[in-house]
Amino acid sequence: MISVVLVKPQEPGNIGAIARAMGNFELKELILIEPLCNHLEEEAFSRSKHAKAILQKAKVMPYDYF
Image (cartoon, rainbow, N blue to C red):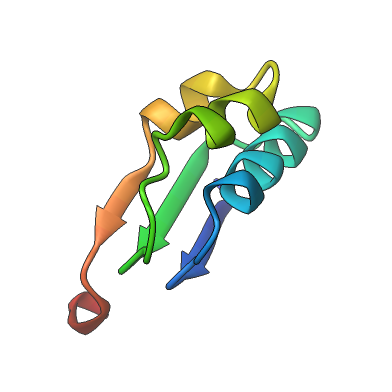
């Protein structure tokens, strides 16, 4: 399984766009390390298009976890 990991993402729209790209390639696991915004904001959902489930299932973890 391939996971996409974002470290301290700043813009919810960018997270949504990445989720959309993940959906295009059938990637399912998105991990957010100390996000600086809320990945569940409307902007993220609108940019994600068909990949809303990826945003809803995204794992949020602290930086020191790794």
